[in-house]
Image 1 (cartoon, rainbow, N blue to C red):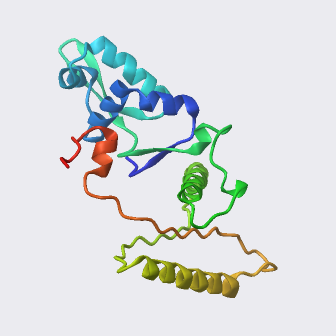
Image 2 (cartoon, rainbow, N blue to C red):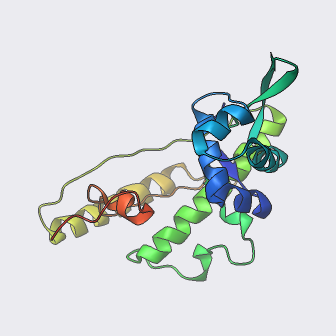
Length: 209
């Protein structure tokens, strides 16, 4: 099972977003299960669970983990192909964000467009690497900083811009034989308050004011 799988196909994205199928995917990330086992967990008829499993299997979101005999019946044990899934903007090619349309380093929407492109590009790299049975050379840095004031935040951004710009200028070699281009994305945004995502997803009641 992969840690994360990127969904690039529109039909697969639609299948994964169906509430019942998303619930089945969630159950199968915990371990293999048959349609009968899942039916008891989610409160649906086995035939309906089988229908949903076939749709998930068709789009590579679940796979056969094994079979077992139960009386005169052979049950198929299914498992999720990944522990979590990310839908790539490539699933909606006509309306995917394009950071090239505008450039505003202080725009949250431009940051979102950059993040969407990052998901799309890294997803495509992973898909190609998996087919070629190769790895992908990447690097990521994740940290958190508490600024004393907006002025400190602005100063940090200015210093970060100068530092990253100097590194890019130092190591960029337009004429290097055999060189390969790499994209550098650096982002800064406020940390979400506890419970924010749960409220957005509808899994937690809003905190009383």
